[in-house]
Every structure is written in C-alpha cells, then in structure tokens.
Image 1 (cartoon, helix red, strand yellow):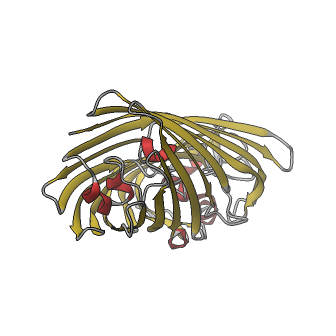
Image 2: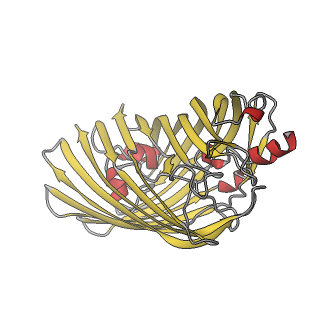
Length: 412
C-alpha cells in the first residue's frame, strides 16, 4: 500500500503550488502600453520598477502612479488519445503602485508595490487531466523601497531590497488505475493551501544618458526563494481502507522565483516621438525540480520541471500629440521556459506574441489618466508531460490573454 501511495503522491504539488513560469508582465499602465519597455524610459513613477536609477531624472519633486488591470485568460485543450476537450477561463487583477520623492538634485527615494507573479487556472473538476491539476490560485506581491543617486549629469544608480509575500491554493486528484481511490465514484483529491509565504531579494539599476536624446539602462532583479512552511494538505473523498494513511497534514516546499536581467535603450526621435527597446533574460534554469515534503510520513513528492532560461524582446513607442493626449503602442515576443515533455496543464503557456497600446489624457498639469490594453497570443502547441508515474499526458493547447487597464499619474 505504501508503494502505491508513493506512486500516486509523486509530483502531487509540482510547480502548480507556485508560479511555474507564469510571469505576469503588467507592472505599469504607461510602460505596458509601450510593449512593457521601460528600463531606459523616464516618464512617471513607474520607473521605480523598471529601473530605479531613473528616479533621479524625473522632473517633478513628487510622483505617484497607481494602476490595475483585468486579466482575462482562455485556454482550450484537446487530448490526443480520445480527442476529449476541456476549457479553462480565468480572471485576475494585477495591480501596481509607485511613488517617488526627490530629496535634492542628486538623491531620490521611492516605493514600488506590484504583482509580478500570479496565476489562476480552473479546469472542470475530475477532467481528464485532474491527476495533474483541477485548479490553482496563486497570488504574490512584491514591496520594494528604492533609492536613486545621480552621479554627474549623465549617469545614475539605484536599487533597494524586495520583500515578497504570497499565498497559494491548489487541488488535484489522486490517481489509481484500478479506480480504488474514490468514494461513490468521486475520486480522492488533495488540496494544498499555504498563506503568508515570504522572502527577500534585491533590485539594482544603472542609467546612462550619453546625449540629450539617447538613454541606456540596465536593471537586475535577484532570485527570490519562496519557502512554504507548514501549509495545509487536506484529503477529500478518502476510501475507508486508506483513511489511516491519507490523513490531513502539513507540507513544506521551496520554489525559486528567477533572477532577471533587463537591458535597453530609448531614443527621442523628435520632441513628440519616443521609441524604446528592452531585452529581458529570466534565469528560469534555477527551477529544475520542486520537492514537497509531507509532515505525516507520506513519501516526499519530487517534481521535475527542467526549465530553461528564457528571453523576451520588447519594442515600444510613444507620441505626444498635444498637451492633453499622449498615445502609445508596443509589441513583445516572450519565450517559454518550458521544455518538450515537461508541458503540464497548470501553466499552459508556449512562446507568445503580445500586442499593446494605450493613451494618457492629461487632466491638468498635475493629474493624468492612463489607459492600456494587452493582447497575448500563445502559439498553438501539441506537447506532453512525461515525467509522472501515472503515465504521459499529451494534447493540444490553444491560449489567449486579453487585459485592459487603467491608472492615474499625479505629480507636483
């Protein structure tokens, strides 16, 4: 019996317990509208996230940017053997808040609060991939105090610590080929729930302005190790013969949120027209496996993921039509960190093309209202997860994401 339980519990938590490569690139309405470029752009307090070194070049003494988006995700799946289908439609609300204050001509301080990781997937309960995941709800918030120091006319540095806090709720079925793990035809399932997960990291940036029109920027965000301790593991619909083994317990697990390096430039083509390019490298190769330890003697769950480092290429432009309206547009190509045969339905993502746009309506000299939209098309993919003792799970995934957003910019 214990050997059978070892097989059914192997990979029970997997990357679904946390981010699993699901990076949410919505950290500011203005910069999102410009293809999420920003490492070399200085136009609002959003620079506190994209490159804190740029805070020193903001014109106003105090700057505030607050925004939120509605994230609508739709994924369709068709299984390869019997051609059965499933769909998950999910909604999220990533948000951001940035504030900066110029203490003097060479020193500025700021605060950034944002949601860089998060996912929500809800397949039909007991669907064909239920032994991998039924549903997951992940939330992570980063709180980042920052400083920026201007060194001469053309160079600045900035950075600060990052405090990350989050929670996760995840459910999946136990699998048994003979169907013994069920009660009244309802399969036994496990829910993992952890709250108050926290960790520390740091953020560093530099900015160089060789001419009045050209800016160069670089930003590094460190790896953050999220450590879940004494989360709740709850079993439901447990048959009588397994009640002594499948007892509710607690679990421990660690997951790295990868380091990121972004470099880029912006160029002021005319007084009204700005263009920007960012290159981002996420060090996802730090995520090779997630081990989940159950604290009641059940076998440790070892979950291979074998992620690879991935790049994102971002392009953006901004055009200031007049004192009231500024228009923005952008595009980025995002590589998936998931390798072949490691494709699991908790994070059904492939390489993607994203199209963005938006505008600012300047109410007065102090207040502006920002609008953005994001459309992500994930390449259709036929792939599988082949590292589960319960057998391979293969099929075709089609995913799209649409996200409208709104924010305000205030400064004096």
